[in-house]
Image (tube, rainbow, N blue to C red; front, side, top):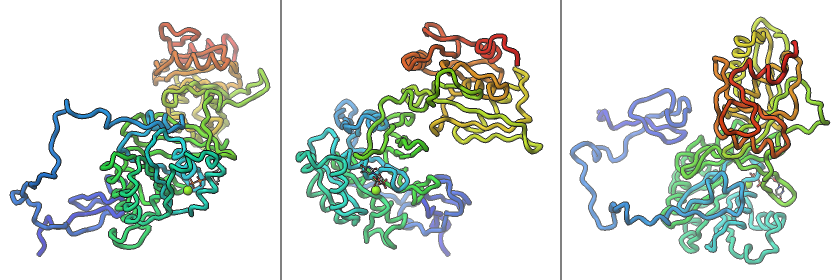
Length: 461
Ligand code: TYD
Ligand code: MG
């Protein structure tokens, strides 16, 4: 009979191990992926039997005072929007995963990065998907070919086999390694068939380890399916330091969003457009999501929110539509702002202003198709819903920020002064927000009733 602890349950999706069987993997949240697996080296790990390793090549602890802070220094990417999402450049010894749907621009970003990175070291660009000729064509298109020193320093290796890549890494000792893509990597040592999750995980981990041991940095791309999951579920996310996702909106902007960042904030987004010559950063993002209309022509149901995306303020148009509910239950249709938030704000309006919304279907959208999760959007959302329900349009040169509490009070938000400053610079004449001292140009409001009286004065519904 097998010993009780000789079995473990291993997730086939992410490799997570559990001592007991579970219906859902606690690590990657996949269902029915835990399978019974025999524990390797049975017995050698049992208590009392472990022997401490000995040997001179084992790592030894260092006094913190002797640690060289330069080990953590960064390399500028030469692409401002990418630096922003990374938290100020590429951290040495870090591994960055760039995920996104096919065609979004992952390979283009990596090639542009290889050309612009502020390092004198060597750069190895490994592609398992394209031929050297195809990569050269892309470089021509990006206008890189004219610069001989750039073309010389990017070394192309078209291979997906781990051993071939490692051989070249050891020969070249690059400071920057691009791997395009994780899904194509394979190694005979990883067993089974190329393209499986295990292959990808094994090879990626080897390459990540190589970069950490050799003071290099690694960028590795991964295809994401339409549903937004990295094919080969989430496994790589745990192994890298930073995870960036490339997304696209209806207006063709490409957003680079951090989903995990050991060396910076995940609030920052990078915004690009894809043009004839590759990806260009969008610097002036303040007005990007505003709808251009003829002056004094804003319809009811529209309010302008000044929200934070990372450290930047962007102004976005929140659009609301209310129509009498078709069924006995009213519904909320909102995918750019969490629909729970929309329901909560409409409940506050109903309770504190007596505005009947519960028998209406509510539709909410954000112009430009950007998802807004920042709490400061709530007051503008409340104004848009009020305006949609009453048919009264808001002044179009009014920007709004604030959190709405269940009691109808307007709560403070982060960086209010910065939001007001951005809005004023963009030509807004009024800014409605929570009362805060020393914020010039602010129309302070304490609660939702005061908001309505400030905006609409004594106008009757
Ligand atoms: P690509 O980087 O190959 O995407 P991914 O690696 O994520 O699959 O590029 C995607 C698309 O971008 C492709 O359809 C061609 C287009 N593109 C341009 O419009 N302009 C350019 O300068 C380049 C290089 C590509
Ligand atoms: Mg590609």
